[in-house]
Amino acid sequence: MIEVTEKAAAELKTLLEQEGKSDLALRIFVAGVACSGVQYGLALDDEVSEDDVTMESNGIKLVMAKDIERSFTDGSIDYIEDENGKGFLIRNPNAGGCGTCGGCH
Image (cartoon, rainbow, N blue to C red; front, side, top):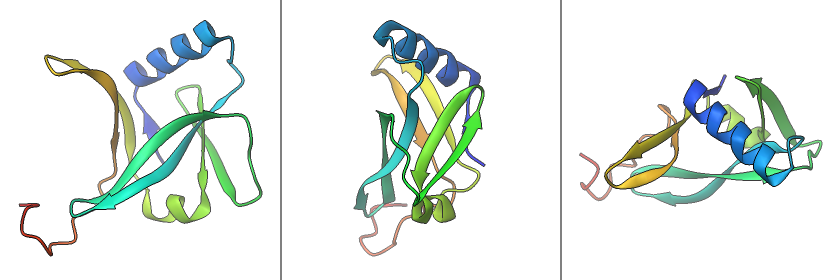
């Protein structure tokens, strides 16, 4: 199960309301692969295919491809604000680095 934190859910709900798109889901997708592991992205989406898995956390509907769901269990989506900026942070404890470059330690 992927958890959307209360702070992230509040930000997402505000964003969806401002855009007038409260019925959209948050899609999690693979944005790339680096030496630190799989990098994920987020997008608002109104389509669900038969190859997708849907779930809900803190009132936010999540959508992702089945192959992502298998490797993205016990993850979370948070919203952070600090001196470097603000944004959504995707955490997947199962996405370890490959260990080939030595830069992941």
